[in-house]
Amino acid sequence: MARRERYELIFVHPDASAQAAEDLAEDIVVVHRTDSSGPGGHPVYADDTGIVLAEISDHAEVRMLASGGHQVHSSAVRARPVG
Image 1 (tube, helix red, strand yellow):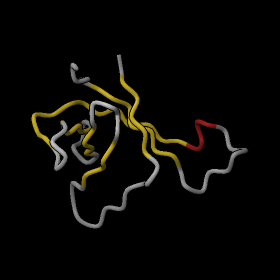
Image 2 (cartoon, helix red, strand yellow):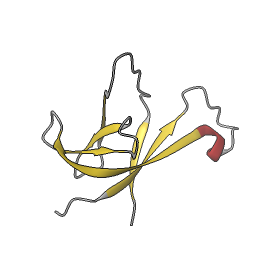
Image 3 (tube, helix red, strand yellow):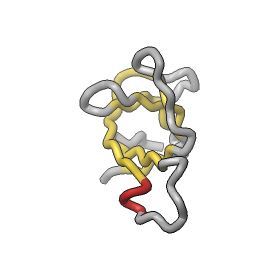
């Protein structure tokens, strides 16, 4: 299966209520494939700043990776392929 070059990472705010508008309850970051592989052997994707790093499987399963100290990642992150 061919690997995607770009994904949108969708971070869902843990305190977002069901009543909140979807665009207010989510943050979206576009990431692109790097030459690195993560601990699971899948490609690592990064945003343009290099701060947001994620290993994304061929089933769009996301594992957030720390790019520096003291990072706390959201537990609710989805990956959506970008055309």
